[in-house]
Image (cartoon, rainbow, N blue to C red; front, top):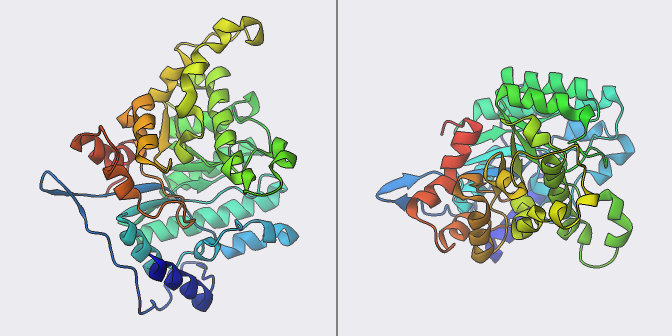
Amino acid sequence: MKNRRAFLKQAGTVLGGITFCGCDMSTVAFAQSTPAPRAPVIINGQKVTAVDVHAHCFFQDAIDLMGPEAKTVLAPTRGQDKNFIKVEERIANMQAQGIDMQVLSINPFWYKKDRETAAEICRINNERLGQLCAENPKHFSAFASIAMQYPDLAVQQLEEAVKKWGLVGAAIGGSVAGEDFSRPQFRSILAKAESLNVSLFIHPQSTPQLSSRFKGNGWLSNVIGNPLDTTIALQRLIFDGTLDAFPHLKVIAAHGGGYLGSYAPRSDHGCTVSPMMCDPSIVLRKKPTEYLKDQLYFDSLVFTPEALRHLVAQVGVSQVMIGTDHPIPWSEQPVDHLLETPNLTDADRVAILSGNAKRVLGLRI
């Protein structure tokens, strides 16, 4: 493992950040030393593919449009030099993890930009992602970038990304610069996703209202802030009646859905214990925890087999998919993580490895 990490670091230093321009999707020369692929998963005598619904990339020309803010875009981790896709290198690293396909996404860094700049950033991202997926259909699919702060623009971008570029939904933040996207002004975007039968993939970028408390040791803005922001986003979708308003909307949550899955039943009791803290005009059609087993989906990035076992027990096998956060090195062996999870049947493992992603995202792999 150490040798593999050393190779990745060296490759990033030597090869630098290569981005795609125009329609030229050529790759750089591949380094001589590559990580060994993981043995395929065989269940009941058949090879099972693995789909990672939580993987990232960047395109430099989109980042450049941020001006002085560009330096804040790349996450401060040892994986940042791998966010610029070099196709053969990325595929080799996927195969070392046992992953056959990644559904790529770009964390939204443009929510505070003006309309023209945000539109161009998203155009570049979606065009590049569309080209990449078209040229490598067995290995890559992608979520679109959309300018959520301009709902009318986001609606147009989502439709174009799906119909023109073949993308399978959109990646959105845990909020729109602190505004919950369950609010009325964003409902046109949710309606468009529902009508197109595509998914919204929530990936948070901390909880901005708590930034002062996250300062200091431990990278708490990520370790606590990211799962917390996702938890709030999902709860708002439930308690604001958004999922009732859009009963066919599909939402996938990164990082196992934050803290929601680990303590969800408390949500069923809040308005009973303290009705004065709830809005009597919003009457949910189901118990809050029932939404977790229907319209909400979760990736498997919860670190331990016991945590994944509990998540599956809470939300159901049909709602969980592989997620790694690649190339950020949170999860080195996501397939083994799943295979080591107790109380799963062979059918359960097949569903989480790729069956659920194929069904929900309409993937053909």
